Amino acid sequence: MSKTGSSGNKRTYRKVAQKMLAALDSGEFPAGARLPPERELSERYGVSRPTIREAIIALEVMGRVEVQTGSGVYALKVFKTNSDNPRDYSPFEITEARVLVESEAAALAASTLTDEQFTELEAALEEMSQENESGNLTSEVADRKFHAIIAESTQNRPLINIIRHLWDIQENLPDIRMAHQSVCKTDGERRIAEHQAILDALKARDAHTARVAMRNHFARSMDALHATTEQRAVEEIQRQLNARRERFSLNRIQYAAE
Amino acid sequence: MSKTGSSGNKRTYRKVAQKMLAALDSGEFPAGARLPPERELSERYGVSRPTIREAIIALEVMGRVEVQTGSGVYALKVFKTNSDNPRDYSPFEITEARVLVESEAAALAASTLTDEQFTELEAALEEMSQENESGNLTSEVADRKFHAIIAESTQNRPLINIIRHLWDIQENLPDIRMAHQSVCKTDGERRIAEHQAILDALKARDAHTARVAMRNHFARSMDALHATTEQRAVEEIQRQLNARRERFSLNRIQYAAE
DNA sequence: TTAACCAACCTGTATTACCAATTAATGAAA
DNA sequence: TTTCATTAATTGGTAATACAGGTTGGTTAA
Image (cartoon, rainbow over all chains, first blue to last red; front, side, top):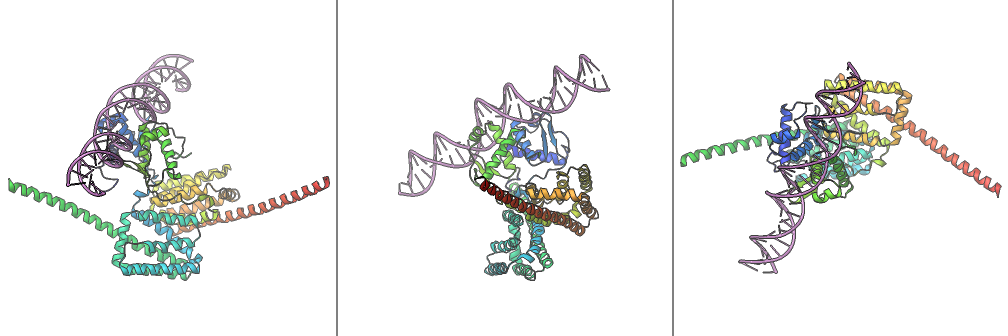
């Protein structure tokens, strides 16, 4: 199950917050409206006031409601996107952000890469193709190294840190790891070729081609991500169907036994 | 200042959460470590246990800590956004990074901006031109608002946060503030026109033109930055020369006095 | 000696009851 | 009609208490 989202969580404030979130989404608490007072909510959800307060604070931190002391709790119209909680970034968001940033980094790198860094890039590429042949598909270290060298070459520290940051986040998103693996498994050769294309463009000092090559590379990652996401959705539905079928057959067995 | 970030907030749980956040960032509560128990924290921060619980819930929703019932509260491994020291970024680096990121954001925004956001952009532009006429040149709020709306419209939270982060850093760099002022002073009209050009491109849903307009806008900022930096360098040299001359003349006076 | 078990202790969970501070509405007075 | 004090409603915060799950370390049995 999901770590954070399930309604089967033990802690009460989460359950309450989730119900209130549903009420917020369903329009039961319309945008801009004042929510019922804490005491009333505590009655409605059958929990104590402190727990309601906790749920409200959770909603507040999520940017869904605003608390005005002495006045009431108000449903916010526009969700404040203050959720810089990398855990609930979607894989697609991260990938999109990386396309934008890393493509530009590649374009910049076309004019900043040193000979030494070209050698490092080739080494990283070689490492990748060895990983590919040896079937060690779980590792992204060579991949990351390749991109890191390009980032480093720009000598723009904010940019370098942004790219590193995005990698860090991504490596903690299971969806992306899975997509990465599936990409390597099904078409590892092509992945190498894409990196080679980037390297070639950089060697030619061609900023535009480097940018395009990087974008193409990410476009494939994005496709793979879509594919695995779809596949997982299908599997989930099948799982649910199987569970239902099993329950149904159990019922029949019970009838037969009676 | 900011609605959410200030420590002068009235509600106690926010103050406590902020202090704990500082402790988390400073390494006083290292990643992975267990925080002191609620009872102890309530003593340390001089608030009651429910309030501590509220603060912890806020941190939990922010994704900074994890609560394990019966065991304790644990500091989550957080992605090192703060690992870079923004203080020794050069203004040029920041501006370059912003060109890359914000130009792409503008290109994206061309297809994502809503009618409401167009209205907001126009309002921000109006605000800027009023600031310009009234001679209130120190303020960047309307400027930042303009760029923030574009960022928001992409609905890409990593991207939004990156742009916000770069703004935050920039606003603490005196060199850039100075360049900004000099740009406004010498050519406020043109600055408005540049923003207008961006807005026009966005209205036309023309990603390419929007990107180019944004790049041009930043190019001017970069020029202004170069100019003021040069000017400051010249002034600094003059100051040093003057200081030396003064010292020299003082020496001569001392000689004369002996 | 080692492994399994169990009980005491620690920690978070949740409630009740109470009072304080702030805000918004009310109504009286100018 | 406006202004200002009063009052009601609401959130803010605390204390004390009981409970449930987890951890730990000692005891017991193998």
